[in-house]
Length: 492
Image 1 (cartoon, one colour):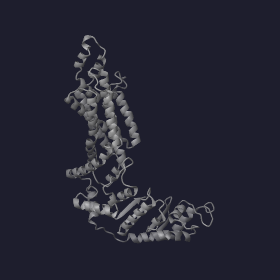
Image 2 (cartoon, one colour):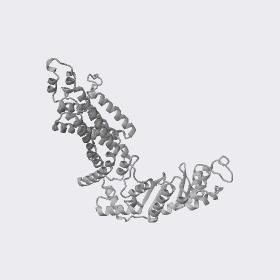
Image 3 (cartoon, rainbow, N blue to C red):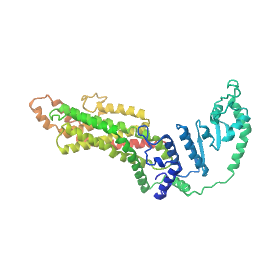
Image 4 (cartoon, rainbow, N blue to C red):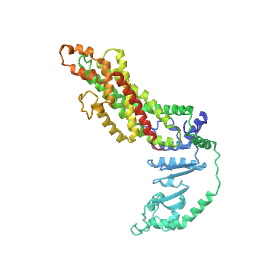
């Protein structure tokens, strides 16, 4: 929908896609997810053909492929080259680098270029290569795969008539000299003759794509929304496999059940235990979404840069589709977690208090996710970004207000940028409001100071409810803006 011109009718786009699927033999896996290292998808050969089909949609006259047969077995490689050969017979020029092709794959090449350290050793018909090297004194002593023989020559290795490479020094230099003397002038003359032939393209699809590329910098709101809607659909299709896989859902439910059993129907007056549960919720839903989202942009970098280079969409439409597409995926699991933990843990038995707690946790999840997106987009390396995220969340947790109350002045500033601190404050306010009722129950007004320290340090004061909400809203916007600006600096 986005690879082809916007002006092209939807039916024509679908027909073009169906034609390409049939042409590259992808009908069997038409409804199979591409997959990745974590999700099983199409096979290696099918993945290569999908990549080629993506470029074939715009009906290019020239197709350049970088080692399309690498990683495939001989049968899959042969099928792929047969497909490329059929495209070449239809008038398209197919240029590809190939790593150790089999003999039957080699026999399908119309022309072959042999390079060694940037120098040309041969250019011509694939079937004539062995005769040419035999004419300049390099022939195998026994029948072998021509591709293997050419690769040996390109590496300066030759075993001819019992002579080793030590007996025949300067093999590369001799081959380069032979090419420049014999083949070079012929190739240059043929290229000059070809360059003098006028060419023109009358393909309406290709010309339409060219016009579309020239207009790619000027996108109306309707075009932007069209890009956004298509990207959102793709994001939802892809993310449902990632967000709701069995392992991730089991992890969240197991954590919820474990927390619910550990704090089973905790007493309202057990301030320390209750605050431990609230802080655990703050830790879990700060670390979990930030670590999951930190991999988002680094993993999508290759496809993102490729599609951006093709002018398929604007960065803003891609970014907004990514953000909006994450919302239903990221907010369902926290809801399930809280439904289990809240009532098992015996927190405030009031439906309105539960709703407020849920809203705080969901908002906190979105802020933590934004932090992960910002770190991933800024660093664009999954390992480095995850390390920085771990250190950042550790600092946020330690200064969150539960472990240490008297934070040294040199470290106190971290508390005010800690997302955990503001979530923890809001959760305690929902459970204990301003602390007056719990102070009365604990006898703080009658000289009993046993549990009053927790009331004074965790429930009362430090920062107001509106202040916490305001800071979290600011962080929600700031982290996503930071992620967007970081993506803009990536050159397509």
